[in-house]
Image (cartoon, rainbow, N blue to C red):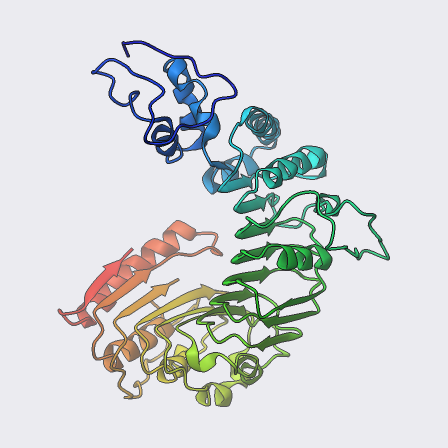
Amino acid sequence: MGGKRVRIHTNFKPNKCCKRSFVGDVDDRISQLPDDILVDILSRLSLKEAGRTSVLSSRWTNLWKHTPSLNFDVGQTVLDKLYRQRELFKREKRKYVKWVNSVTRSHKSLTLKEFKIRFALDKSERKAITRWLEFAFSRQVESLELDIKSDRHTSTDYRFPNELLIASKLQLPSDSVCIDHTRMLVDFKSLKELSFRSVQVSDAAIDFFLHNCPLLEKLIVHHSEKISKLEICGSSLKLKHLEIVYCFGLKSLKVSAPSLTSLRVTSLDGLLLENVPMLVDVSVNCNDDSISIHHLFSLLSCCVSQLQTLCLDLTRRNFRQEVNELCELPKMPKLKKLVIVYCARGYENLIRLASFIRASPHLVEFVLEFKWYKLPRKDREVKDVVKILHHHLKVFKFCGYYGGTNDFEFLSYILGNCVVLEKMIIDPYFIWSRDKLQVEETARKSAEQKLAPEVPQHIELIIL
């Protein structure tokens, strides 16, 4: 780049669009843009890409330090690779901590829209993690995500430091913390999204955020063993999305949030839903055989008639004892998308799952994630399917297709009863088989040879 250059000092503040701090050669038109536009452009790059622009010229040296988003997510692909090489993982973890420390020390923006940490960390990095949180909160962060899960997806020993929330003394009877909401070290009023994954966060800390973050719309907590009894309640709550997932110490969860639209939970113990008139998207695990399908829907009774999306994880259920209950499912008149995760044990007839379709007269998309506990060793004769027409289902996706009798029976039901079906997606993906590639290829050939001839020409068949 040619032309005159003006050094940007460390106390640089982005100029507004009406001003230009730099006049360069006509061939370098990007550098002639106002500072705030250049910062906006850099914020659309990854953090490392934005940092590399500092070597272009003195004009760009400090611009990246004013980007409002700091995303330190290395990506799942990288993490999966590191998990398999312990020594490499240790080296990369040290580099990761050094990288985050370096950026947070040099960053100049007074506010942050996003601050995201995603790496497998443990209590040895406790002080560094706490400093990062202090940094983010001091910059009035709007979206904070701390994801430090280990390679086995278990909880870490890092506990959220409640001293970040208060200046007064903490009382620690047992493992609980009594928090005085009146004294705070920082202002949390800008926080809109908060996500803790594999962080030991207490009931009291969650309650604190609910009462001191008036703009909070998204709250996600995964793998926290310290959560026991939660009340997500308040007529003034702006909360729209709530996830309480794999918190195995959870004994009760009460939710009363008038703006809530999306809910994901993996424990039904003590679940109580009240005053959720906007709730339309629900995902639940119903893997405890002590909780019947009938009881599951009774827990959702206040919102089942308004649901538009429902995801049910039924991987550990014994449906042989629940055939009658499946025939008596409540009507879900507004349901548009249904996802069922189910595990096969032998030769269970998948036709029973059609009860969910019949209970959802306006269903448009149905996804079945089928997980084999053991692959069938022989086929049996396909039974005739029942004729109960469905007039809205357009897309059906079958994940875990193997090509056995169970699969073909259910697909025949879909083809014979869903009269406006437009697309059928077959995904022969397996995670439990030792001969994964061979099993998937066998399933793929079965779909091409056995299923494809049965699919009418007007239906698009996609075999992944």
